[in-house]
Image (cartoon, rainbow, N blue to C red; front, side, top):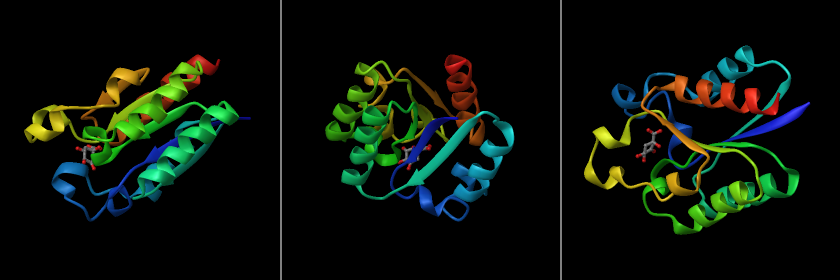
Length: 145
Ligand code: DQA
């Protein structure tokens, strides 16, 4: 069964209690359960870290293992050129990398309007809560056949 990595950056381990008016009241465990219920024929490997180096290492693993990636880079979205370079390795290897956001960063503070990930991603889905992930996963599944 094909594996898809669903990678989440800093502070997303706090979903459920972190700014629920912005991010909703569901936790990462809720998200994982929902994605597993929606998906058959794919192994969902959902991870979260607050550490940039760990996230970069997981993108290297995606390249080496040929895993498609759904990535919520969280605040790293806006300034991590190291993460951008690692994301580029994924798409340059011909693998799908979808950037997702729960909120719509363009409707928020100005510093969130810049993404250093979008230009190297296959595509970006933002502002739809957990549906951002569901739609990204549906795309990955359709592309994997
Ligand atoms: C986020 C948006 C980012 O601006 C923010 O730093 C996050 C979460 C989102 O999913 O809406 O941590 O990526």
